[in-house]
Amino acid sequence: MGMVHNAVGKFNVNQRTELFYRRFIPSKPSLVLVFIHGAGQHSGQFVDLGRYCLQHNIAFYAFDLRGFGQSTGKRGHVHSFYEYLDDMHKFIGFVREVHPGEPIFLLGHSLGGTIVARYGQEYVSQVQGAIFSSPALRLRFHIPKSLYLVCHFLSFLTPRMSMDLNQWCNLVTRVCRLTDTYTFVENDPLFTCNFSVRWVNQLLANGQQALRKARNFQMATLCLGGTNDPLVDPVAVQEFYDSLQVKDKKFVLFEANHELLQEDSKETVYESIIEWLKCHL
Image (cartoon, rainbow, N blue to C red; front, side):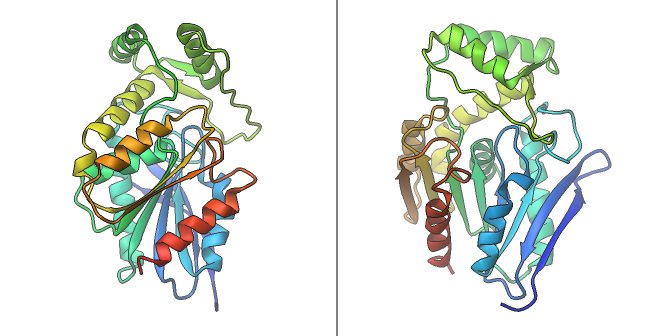
């Protein structure tokens, strides 16, 4: 493979926002994959994926979203989802400058999947395709309209008010009368557990927007989901996929939970990603 370049760096979106990123770059990459992580996560949790891409001659970039990991910003908060979209657009521009001749693909997991969907719907970009891993388009359990309205109201009244992620899950469990809940147990000091009401409001609203505007998404698409996902509704992922107007699309369901890219069977998912990417060279 020749000389490879593994590094971390910081990308300045503007004078106030700095994004931390990791990259794995082979000497002569065949393509570039830009990865966007899920809620609470950071790029350091996906080093194995970066190394796997490196073995297959694919340049891999993963940045921490604002408010997550080692990037700047209030933890688990955005005033507008468009902040994520604009950050990603500028970061892709930076990657394009480094790799002017290689095709660029996006891979978004959970929250990252919703960001990729909304980005493709709202921005004109020279990106060749997108991969969705358990995109957070709709929660698997029903949330009462009253809870949506309370969240929406508080997002304007006290937008920066934050709650621990497990408290959010416990609240939803009680209100929705669920028998089971999803518990986030993270010893990683870079894992973000607190989220603002404005962030929750923006995530839910943009998941709905992504589904409504699915026809506007015009990239080659690979959708990946887990049949046992306790968080994301696989039916919503199927709805998004079915609504896509592009002919170049594929949907794969795995017998897995939410964290497709981190579970014991992750290499099977990696193989599906690499196979799909190589078919688009």
